[in-house]
Length: 67
Image 1 (tube, rainbow, N blue to C red):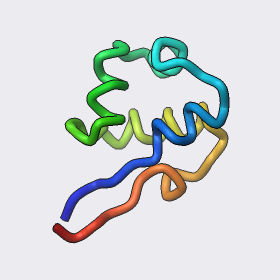
Image 2 (cartoon, rainbow, N blue to C red):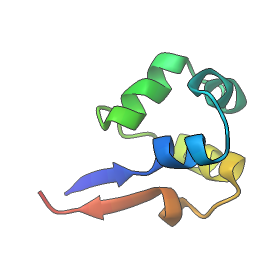
Image 3 (tube, one colour):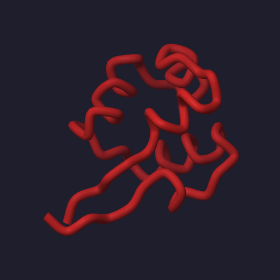
Image 4 (spheres, rainbow, N blue to C red):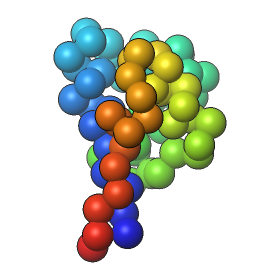
C-alpha cells in the first residue's frame, strides 16, 4: 500500500506557497517539497496539522492506494 496525497493541489488552491505552509505546520520547505512529490509519508501528527491548516478532514488530503 502507498499513501497518496493532494497537498500540492490543495495548497495551490488555497493560495499558499510551500514556505508559508511549512511555517504554519512547523517544518522545513524541503519537507513540504518531499511530501508533495510523494517521497515522504508524514507522521500522523503532521497529517493532522496539515488537515487543520487546510480546514479539511485528513481523508481529503491522504488516501491509500495499492501498488
